Structures are given as C-alpha cells and as structure tokens.
Image: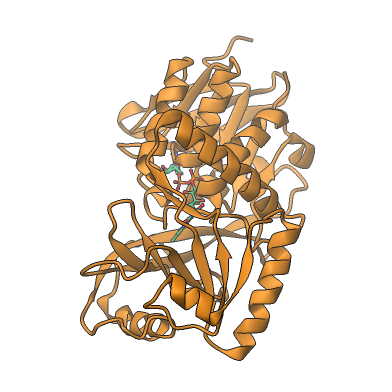
Length: 370
Ligand SMILES: Cc1cc2nc3c(=O)[nH]c(=O)nc-3n(C[C@H](O)[C@H](O)[C@H](O)COP(=O)(O)OP(=O)(O)OC[C@H]3O[C@@H](n4cnc5c(N)ncnc54)[C@H](O)[C@@H]3O)c2cc1C
C-alpha cells in the first residue's frame, strides 16, 4: 500500500529537527508536523543554551553516552555550519565542606563518562580565575560551552530541507492509529491544516505532548505506562555587566543543576533555572521567587547587588514517570521495546537534550530499518 510519506516526525523542537535532518540526509522522505505557528518555540526556546560536557549522569545511562557524543558532534556542527557558540568553560563550586566531597564524586562520575578534561581546583586557583567568586574549591570543565539554539534549529531545518524534508507548522497531531495488517500508521492533524496522513514510520518527538500521543498506541502493548511530570525552571536576568567570564554552577540539587549563572552570546548574565513542580504548562515567572535566587547566588557571589534581578523566562522540564516512579534517563522507545514496527517514541528528553540532539538523531537513524 502506498503511503503519503515515508517518515513523519512529530514535533519541530531541536530534537525533531535534528532527526529530520539526519533522516533526510540519509535519503528518507520526511515530513515534520509541528502544532505551533513556528518551529522551536517550546522547551527548545526555554533553556540555558548550554553545551554540557556530560559530567553528572549515571554511568551507562543514555544521558551519559548521548551527552558526550552529542557535545562533540555539536561543536563540530557549529564549526562546520557557522553556528554562533563559545566554549567558555564552567566552574562547579563548593561553598561548604560537605560540598567539597561532592565535587570529588562528581569528578569521578565525569571521568567514568569520558569527560577526561575535568579538573579539581583549590579555592585560590578558582577565585583567581574568577575574582568575584567565593568558594572552598571547584571543578573546572573546559569543554562546557554556550550556543545560539535558534541558529542551530534554523540550520538543522535548512539541512533537512536541502535533502527534501518538509515542515508543516500549524499542524497539531490529535491522534494516531496503526493498521497491523498493512503496517501503516494514520496520523490525524486537526485545526486549520486538518488532514489525515499515512506513513510507515512515526518518530514521536513531541516533547511535552509525546506521552499523550503515544498512549493509545501503547495501550495494546505490554509496555509500562509512561506519564509526563512537569518541572518548571524559572530564570532571572541580571541588570548590568556579567561578573564572570565562565558559567558558574553550584553542586546539583534535587531535580536540577542548581541556580547557576549562564552568560549568553551577547554577554548578558542570567540565573536559573530553579525547580518548581507544576501541574500544567504555564511559563510566567513569579517575581516573588527572586528571594530564593538572591540567597542561592550569594552563596558563591556575595557581591550580587540588591534589586539587580528581574524575572526573565521559564522552561518546563519534560520529565516522566514509569508506572508511577520517576524515571531520570531519556527514553528512546523502539519496536524492539514495544513491538510496533515503525514507531519510535522519545520520552523524558529534558537536559541535556539540546547538547545531545545530534547523537539522539544518530540513534534514531540506527533504530530504523533500511
Ligand atoms: C529549564 C530548562 C533548561 C535546560 N537547559 C538545557 C541546557 O542548558 N543544555 C541542554 O543540553 N539542554 C537543556 N535543556 C533541555 C533541552 O531544552 C531539551 O532537551 C530540548 O529542548 C528538547 O527538545 P525537543 O525537541 O525534544 O522538545 P521541544 O522543544 O519541546 O519540541 C517539541 C515540539 O513538539 C511540538 N508538539 C507537541 N505536541 C505536538 C502535537 N500533538 N502535534 C504536533 N506538534 C507537537 C511542540 O509544539 C514542540 O515544538 C533544558 C530544559 C529546560 C526545561
């Protein structure tokens, strides 16, 4: 049976666009369906824009492997495609003696993950690198950097289109069905572009929408139930000049990396993201949360002036639970997992998903039959 296209990618965030570019370059016929009016306006537009080195993730996890592979691929891609980026490095700082021990275990984990350039610094060395910093010791990660995410997405879209992929915006997918006999999926788009499309390959890269889209298809399989968990991260921007030339992170906190300072490519400093559990997508930033930011940041930058922080933006981490238990790794579900030929689901692609996007695309490509 003929289908409307060979592969449908649902979601034009950085991950969906990287997958579309990879598949199109490999000769696949690809259509990307995006519910919003533009590509990359949800989580891919609401993050720290950091190219992570691959330090924190449990050994053997997808995050650990895909972050290191993705980081290297991303630096190469940025150089080859003139994407604005800077390998500025970062310091993870300890401000108490118990945190000094944590630095050592973070370094061990990083080394196991293949992050071989990470180095433990005495307080004096760290504070001489960043004179406004106060700490008892630090880890220096030279391979951490920052990137223009929108520029990256624009380039990935261009790459995909160069090889024949197409993007349809204003095209929210409301449902999908699978005909077992023919192996064909029907993908139903609602709204102004309402249509039903047939395909043999669906890559569900819908971020916050991925679990809901996949659930009816997975209901007939023995797969454990994957449900979304939303964890908001708020940012505050600093008025005035950035006090540091590197990114400064505290030791990680439960559910996030701690309120860190990132510097964008324009030299503007911002703090965040914090961790705020939420039940629905809401991207407003409550100014009252600034109190927690002043306290957290002054632990390592006592010179933070009063009244210098203003609410900026928020992103929501697309975390997941499996059978009611928090699942902390990426989940790339293929036919080997759920038994449905042609369906790949991407769940829980929170940080470091931006860093890992090209490596995720490689994995998805490898999981697809010739
Ligand atoms: C606060 C925060 C900070 C982060 N910082 C970093 C960082 O510094 N470095 C890093 O590597 N990673 C970071 N991340 C993670 C990174 O942003 C994500 O992993 C990445 O953006 C995920 O991309 P995506 O394409 O999977 O999702 P998205 O960008 O959310 O894209 C999914 C797309 O699917 C579309 N969609 C949803 N449902 C449907 C539907 N039914 N039909 C059609 N389209 C649909 C959406 O509109 C959206 O455009 C951070 C995340 C957060 C929340």
